[in-house]
Image 1 (cartoon, one colour):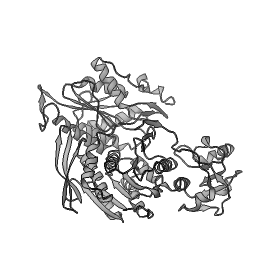
Image 2 (cartoon, helix red, strand yellow):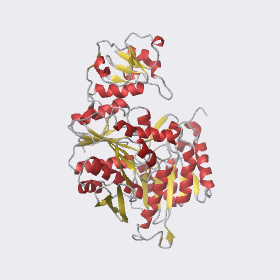
Image 3 (cartoon, rainbow, N blue to C red):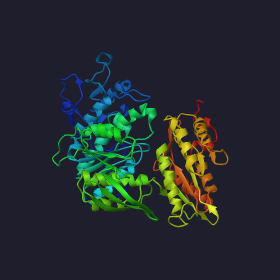
Image 4 (cartoon, helix red, strand yellow):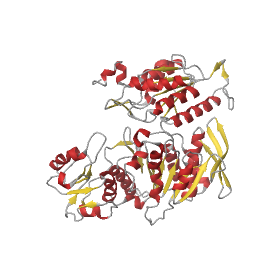
Length: 561
């Protein structure tokens, strides 16, 4: 790779399009039907970025309404405006096109602006609560092992040819016009396939409607984002749109399998099995699935198992450097995508899986010469924390004291799991309790701390979590602690660690910032872990990143409280 490139906008250059052409093939109603013959130089959703000749799309957000900024956009040179307000409420000097949903219209307009790039690609979509990024990277490695030229757009970044494009701090699925820009770059780079990680928010907000998916993969659908979707059923329905979209994918010159790949072990399986109208295949940890794992073994360097096919009556040995049964599932999802969806040889799929060394921020080891294990993981849901802690126990079973020795003593000391995590503000409140309960049951010591409190009271978030810990027998000051500053929380965990223990910092993983109030502060758990270890060991290392909780007073970052 040539290196990480930070691009606020993925477009190579502005392309002139006729307004009529943009609306020619979009499957959403608009008015008026007769559009003026004018040229559009770009599609923009931020009025401050509008340039002469741009098409401004006025979208409603959580706090702002783009319709309030139409005049500003026109002043900056917008050639036309798209909105969802009635015509009589808008009096502007340029053409105004009304649609029912500007977010949905933006998706199709962006695809048209870039020449429908997804129709020139084989597009593999991944959705799920946990494991999306790992599964996407496994599939990407398999494609490389097969010699297939492919791109990747994930939570971590966009990988296009020799460039890695940073997609942002907390970005999951990019906005529709950015995403279509990435797909256009993938086409221009001469690539034929792309792996696209998609979220429930991306589907609910129509960001990926025009991606023309050929294969859809789900990892799992567990407790998460209920604050946004209202219920588990709504959350599941948002993710299921990946599979209904397969029905609408147009025929492609290269062919398109329109295949759904679902997790037989997950609670979503029965619903999806009934819901999906296209061909589907299942994967899982038991022989109830079409593709399943047999003989799973943990090794000092990872895991090995056989990927067995009910359909072909075959077994393929698979080794991976990843750990945990959840990663066996992720490997099976990738294997099934390659073998059943893309018709690649099973041996090539296994080769690709074995080549993935690690995914940044996913069970990532931090080593600075300490005599205990230190790791950072992205687990930020109850289910993810559960499987991460279960995997951590497996790691302890296979470290230092020898392979296969369950919770043995190292020089008279039981090896312990010490976990640091928080729960985000302005998000599902129930998971605060659930995560604290999970940690109390599965970890030895728990430190509750900040994790993107946003405009909520951090003290209240920590109290909600403490109640969950106490409900499962946790004793504050003995088995769990509340430490508002995340840097101090990591320092405390490192200080508590004894030889052979495992210190785990969860919730942020690869992310590069943390939100207090309405401001993002630069933050990386891996840097924080290295800083705390360096201090503990008395060796050179990075400085602990700054967070406003270091000032000890909440009023410093929430001045209105």
